[in-house]
Amino acid sequence: MLSTGALRAHLLAARLAGPVATSREESLRSYRLFAARDPRVLLGLDPEWGWGERDVMALMADKCGVSADPAHVTGPDVIDPERTLSALDAFGGRLRDVAARRAPVLFGTGHPHRLLGFYAALADALSAAGCAVLTPAQGCSVDITTRFGVRTYNLDYVQGVALVREPGARRAGSETGAHTHSPLPVRAALAGLAEGGGPLPELVVGDHGWVCGAGQLGIEAIGLADTDDPALFVGEAEGRVSVAVPLDDAVRSDYYRPLTRYVLNRACLSQ
Image 1 (tube, rainbow, N blue to C red):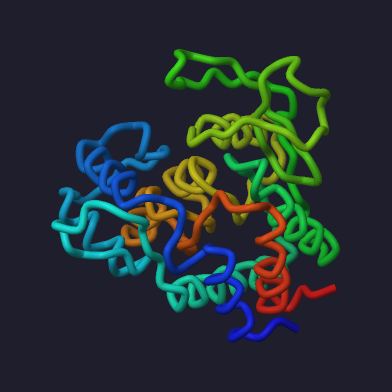
Image 2: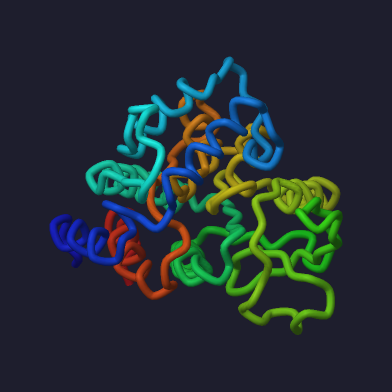
């Protein structure tokens, strides 16, 4: 069992919290774009409230622990590890609840190179607890707007976790995939379930557009988010995201393993 103190120390040592690799400049740019309702940072969320740049900054200070001072414009951003720990407790609680109901779940990530192992372990534990881990619309094409123009990707699943990859880049089932913020993959997955008459997920677990896209459609969603991903925290504030965990979402994949142990313990799913 991993203690809270041990995980706090790991969060700081691995720079998952405390001073993180995400720069203050990157975060402030995202807050400006979110206030301007730029689709690149909305991640599929359609905010109900009016969010100015200062409003977003104040929310992120409250949810993540970043500086609320608009004059602080350079240097590494900072995440309060206590906020990360509290959110991980709530994250584990939602997994515990869905496991108790043996409800269907859907996992998806826009960070397959970093977070696939974290989600895969959770998917395996929920499957062992009797939950259906859904894998709809495998192989379907999704056209996503990128900085290089519109690119076509295929929806795939690795160890029960959805991701997208460029056609022909790797064989289906390999562990590489594309980094994306788009909500289109989760929309495609949910549309596949609706068309097939299968059960919709009672919980979507992931990051970026997977969380905001599902939450916008009224499906409970929980996920991980960095300081430059305000959409998940706005979604949480507005009631469309159940839990947003503040942490650096792009460190080495093995640095997330202690978080897996901690969350599974909180969810009473330790194996």
